[in-house]
Image (cartoon, rainbow, N blue to C red; front, side, top):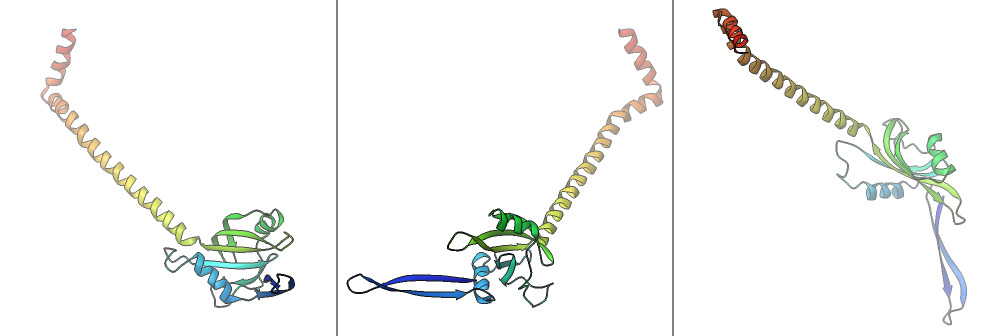
Length: 191
């Protein structure tokens, strides 16, 4: 894959005498993809140890990436995107904004189709970050909410039991002294 730039060259009278063209090969252009990654994910932009990644695809094959193979140092060049993402992005021309399984882990992902000069979809640009740290944070937040809810429920139960005792203790004392039956008889006579 090559990015080309072209500019017309004109003489002093403005007559076109040629074109100057220049290009950059993107296949295995690791400084280029690393620079894209640094633009999208500057240092410290992702919390909780998440990692940002970027990839250029020619059709559905990684030609330049900072995605690593199974946590090692080797980049995942030559690996392919999932069929689901391929169908959406290259097949239908959609932008993919969802989670995706990338090489060996789940990532929060964005895939954008790349088109040539004739408007044909020829590849994709991908950026994403590890989903796991955010999943851990979500589960920790849910656990914290559960603990707070449990503590509130336990506190409410203790308060309810104390309140119930304060109501039933005098009734029990009246029953022990025999005042309870006299009180009920008095209530019946008043009716």
